[in-house]
Length: 238
Image 1 (cartoon, rainbow, N blue to C red):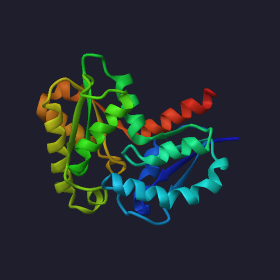
Image 2: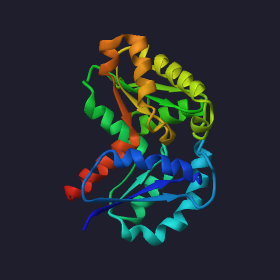
Image 3: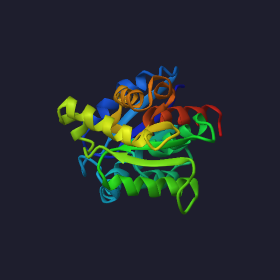
């Protein structure tokens, strides 16, 4: 039987869920079946921690009856989303969020003398995601491995609804602020809605720190990282 991964979009915007499908398919994992879940109601875009907790109440009742049908679960919201914690209580199957997976992947990819950072959406995420990284790494203050969070000022829906040139400009500005801090070895795309925006980030890296160094920066998509982590965990039978 193929491995079954449920990819959960905890906001209620189905077009965001649809935007993940080609990205996941591009990984070309064999003998894996992906099922997609969109919140049946609730926030259309998760723009702060309050939205994340509200989305939990809309998703959990619909998810509970179908948990036994899947081998692993990916929460496609770039935050310390409470669904990760709650599904781990309800299922023995592997569960991760795209935030957690991207940080893990970044730390595995970069040398110890370099750092990783996050490019995200609204300014509220600068502190929220910084705190989330500290929680994940088990540190109470700044980590020497983490260069911080820079934001675009656009929310998840605006990333797709705003004019493409505005999105490109703001993505590149945030990226340049991040890499100008020095020795940034990896950049996490800090929103599921940034799927496919690697090119904008790469352009900004090259423009800010030069072609050689700019092309060496790892650009980590949390959706790809999350699917990869879950594939490994299930197939290794951990």
